[in-house]
Length: 156
Image 1 (tube, one colour):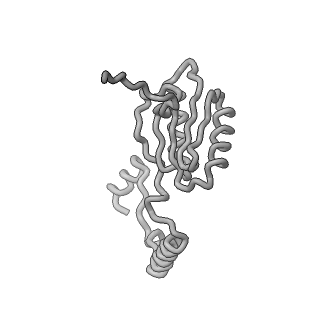
Image 2 (cartoon, helix red, strand yellow):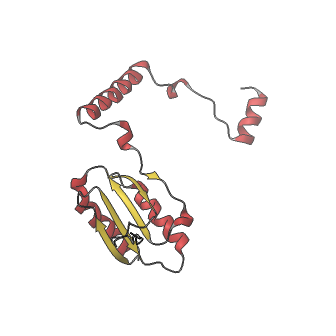
Image 3 (cartoon, helix red, strand yellow):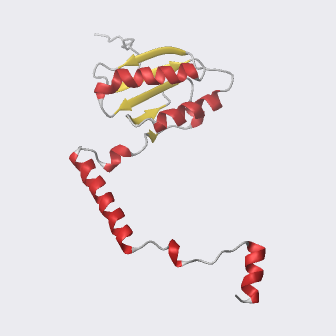
């Protein structure tokens, strides 16, 4: 070993690359085949690659005022997802004021009581909702009101 290599090795803690770290071609082919089989299994199960991504974040942290609307991939999971969200929020100290589901079960709505620090609450909620694989998207906005609209009087 040259004197320069010894100095660099001592100063920077460098190690020389050996041939044992280079994978052999058989391992590379086996890994490639396993990945292709996984892709085929996903297609057979009816899963697309886009369905495995995180929920879309269509809101800013400053938009949070206690309202959270979400949309599910599969409406049949509406009850289990709602119970899971309720369990997590009570564990983290959030108070649920209202929870509603659409008749189809595809969308849901939670209204939480605002605490002392809405910024950190919004970060926690956004982080939790974003990692739920059952959700396609969620937003910090209020549900539409069920009150009838006011109409202007017409003069005849």
